Image (cartoon, rainbow, N blue to C red; front, side):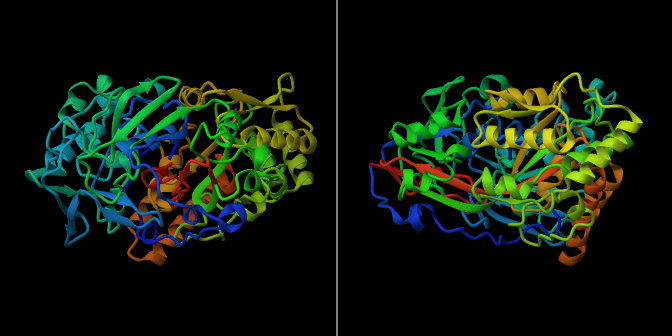
Length: 559
């Protein structure tokens, strides 16, 4: 997640079951399942977190720190098991005879924690609100495959000067039939549409949220396994959640609640785990990747996950425009990075060098992308040659170092950013240095507001198990997480063809074609794929990572 969308539903080949497998639990092969899961069902779990970038509205949260909270506060039509398969939560049935017109029936008798009933209208109103351009919701484009989206999302002007100018307030493709039934008409058939509906952007909202979203986003009322606790959201400090006793579903908590404690230094969080003052954290700081299994024996795990890392290159940074000079420099940077070495030395083998723009853990992944092998290998001599060719077009401004922005709250970020900067210095003979941000949210703000001075680290944790979900939100024109504003009509067209493909094999080919276009343009540099770690205190047990490397908080117990 984490990291905006103009989506068109999901391609045929993208969904289905994942082929994720555990990479052997840490701590000498011991995983969370090897611990004693008995504990106090009323105990509050303390968990690693960070200040969310946006108010806690499901359709306005698309980064990891806010996302992990929103997912606990809401119950949608579906959710995903730890292995990535989707299962119904509020959905009684999701049916279609033509994959374009869908009838969705929801379970009756459930309510938000303010006692308002969850009905079909709760979904339809929430989705219309999310898609409406005047609502300015980050995940609005997730609804772009519904008939009538273009009218509600309309704007006037172009680029940064664009302003909301909806031509309708609701989408023609959404109809409330009765309290427990609504229909969805897509703009085109999509057999995998139900698989996407577990993502938090599709959660229902109570009427108060739409009447006053600004106030609601600070103290959200949901219908999920947890609700906001008495301490609520203490900005730059913590978010307190307690168990929602009325929740009925597959994520029923085994604990009394979760308090997300915010850190700006991931090393401090690790120290708190060792001192039993923090119960669980995802990720391990780079300094501890060689020792965490012995530091925290029987209190660690790791798992291949649908998550990857990239180094993004804003086209507005001088030298990296959408022209021949920029193309040569982007290629040179990619070839100057020794991914194998960094994965081995910095990450102690807990990352694997990228071979594509999407995670290899996804169903129907294809590693044979035209152009990928030539641009992802380490070749210092060719990198220097390409950089020299760019200098002939326009000499590089060496008065300032090339900056690589990163957030210090991310595990291992400083270590690998320093390593890449050193490789640029050595292999391209240019000055380069890391540019730290204490707050992840601040770095996202600078990305959105085009205030970066150079490159920026980025990563993608999949929202739902789909190759499409790793391409559309990041690279489609105008998409929600396309912060660097890459745009290529040919890429957009190819993605649409993937969604409309008549067979999994055809869809798979289209996704390969789409990534081949990305390797020609190289809007960012694929770096490595994630094997996610988690560690926990001696007081906690039952810690499990799901298919994308996220912690399953509802299963954790504490003594």
